Length: 485
Image (cartoon, rainbow, N blue to C red; front, side, top):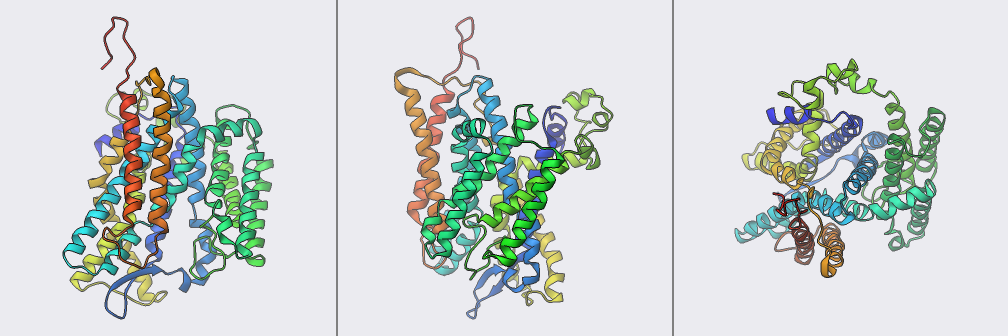
């Protein structure tokens, strides 16, 4: 905790704490929401299985509008990617080294999860475990990975999409939203394969809005963020969402419900984009509270609230300037991917342990006993996930090491080779994740997942590490001819 407090105290005055707070809030809602609606029960043969409680809680479907916060992740991602890419290039870095930094932070923690799951599945199979149970467990634990597939592509496309944003502005997300609508029409007509592009187009549209938000905050020409613009967006987005779901063909739930004709999440639907418009307008309206919001939430140190920057606020001393609220936000952001990747595995571990001990309650969904069981269930999961983060979180913090001093070697076509390795690495890793996500839940897999998909992912990670290694070895010469260490 001392290290986190020091890290929080060293937060630069220029950093937008509101953005970090949004990310922390979003991951908290995702994790708690998944845990809350997860139902663990037994099959007629006594085998553990799990499913969502939402099909049995129809009254809760409108509440998914509050907890469906994946659009917030892509909005914040667009903001952060625009800011970090611009800063990286201003320091003399290249797009390739930026991609290698971003890719490493996303893929190394994911590699640890996948390798752990594959090894656990292999050991379980050798020990004689039911192959269907092993596959079911790995399928369940890999659910968070579907989010990373489109996000990796969004990161890879950041520079060209940012250039399009700077040139065409609002036209870019509008065109992308139009492509999502066309995909929805194809799904309604029974041609779901034509809507696959929506997995990318929908999230790209929201990511573009993050670009605009960052430009507006940086003082560049951007979209208006005044209330007279945001209030109509808020009202219009909410009204459109109501009409599309209650009168139109889209389901009310913004989280997938088995058996629905359309799903709002996979791929993102037009209804999800109208909800995202509502969320974004609300987020930007709240942002207009300005410097008052961090103070209200106790995220900024007292000296900053009074308009004075003390030494501890600048990271000097022992970190006394960090508030408890901001330290918590920093802690969540430091391990945000680890929390996201492992929160479903925590469910598997806890359910397996309680079942082995013979103390796993399985009350009917929606009953008083079921709701009462949610309280100790959530508390135990929080403790277990904290333990998993303590074990695996260091991978994420180490992966955050950046190529700050690296100067790419441009000789002999090496720049072209490095760029090709980077693009190929992103493509292979994404293909592997798609293969893992798209594999049917039923069936038997020696490693609990398709072997080719795991191999493709690992090859992609290796390609990025190779490109990174060749970059990291090139250092700027010092005046005396020595190499900087």
